[in-house]
Length: 121
Image (cartoon, rainbow, N blue to C red; front, side, top):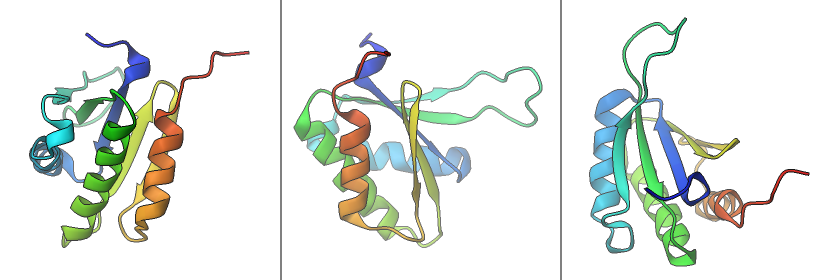
């Protein structure tokens, strides 16, 4: 199992169906094949509702980051409904607004998020 610094988690606000569609889309990308899995977050005390679906992507280098950013942007652009994503690496998250999508901004945000981990000071 890769360490957490090599993993990016993606949560959609579209529920399990959107998460499964995104997983299928990401798995079709050659550079991401075998690096994406769907996990179900456990229900924590105080949570209401069902289990959240979270995609985990193993980031293996610059090509993976570029492919992830490009594929996420394309997927969001092709969807008819507005959908927001939260992408997390460790304790740092970025939110991508599906209504105001800009490919260059998405790439920059993901590159910043997946860049070398900086140790706490």
